[in-house]
Length: 465
Image 1: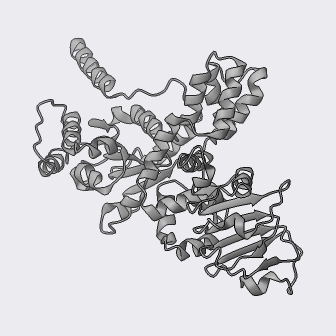
Image 2: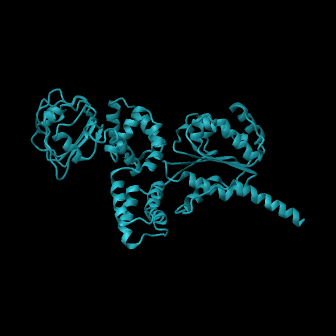
Image 3: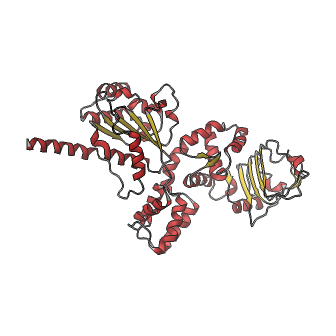
């Protein structure tokens, strides 16, 4: 009997060891997230549940799924963790994923699937009496779901399916599916890492301790602030700075202020690449100029541009690229930096050939040197230390300009047949005397004048309105 117990114990240990997922050595601030997902899974319930972990790239969805998987795998008859489904699906390897799923669940290496229909039939036929735990990591479309775990009755009572995704919209498209049933699908949105945890995570990779040395405290906090607490960025930068000199640290800080790390950019850009043209335009508008603007006002401009903004904003929210909070548009700092880096790469050497210029100093140089081109659609000019009077010659070539933000200054001279595409004009410190003539932005839909002393008889009203 002792030998039998030993054999059973060894077999269970072998299976668990094979199933266990490798997680990072430095896990920080994850306990509360694990508990929340555990609560959604409903350990003691015999129903079949789908738990969806969603959020932007690099925020830790896969790591969370791995930790949960490792903690509860022993409670199921069989388990399977399918990694990076998006990439394998793009390579046309859904059949390979079905084969791996069945091999894991049935504990057999002799499974042979010839096409997806065969795979579906085998999954729902041979798994329906098993209590299974399945993780589908990095889903991005409904077809993957349909061919792997579409129906509850494919699996036995108490089964749990965990999915990680950047985009939850594909789960909402078919109202007749189980995905619309709140008793079946439970959603957990990843939260931004708290600042104290972000410092701890960064420090573990940069210093192999929970806090930075005193002389590195300032620069550590600056780097953490720049990354917006994104775990991927913290790990990449922290690892690269381990044992490096202060001079290297300062260079990395300066570079991080200017551009997104390539490794982080590659992860985040996956979501951007999935967008349609109009959605990309709105994403770039937000990243470069319109974060923290009111959604309701922005919609006026984007609708005038025929960007179908209500649908586009829904897509961006579902893909965790933005959030709408109290009618204001919020974007994570790293996603903002991604958008700005994409625009910068439109023309690295010549800012006047980029589509958007958000740095007022760069914009001033472009305007004063008459380097603006028809590629510019959005521009920010002026500020506390800069006042720019705009003349006809300054913007003569900006024929596609639709967003203009001014921090002072004035329009001076004749503007006939100019700014014909302008939809949004935001003007701070607007002067009481309007010095332009024939100023007629006929497509203007949003006019925001602030911190100004203009009155009802201001000369600009008759021309602008």
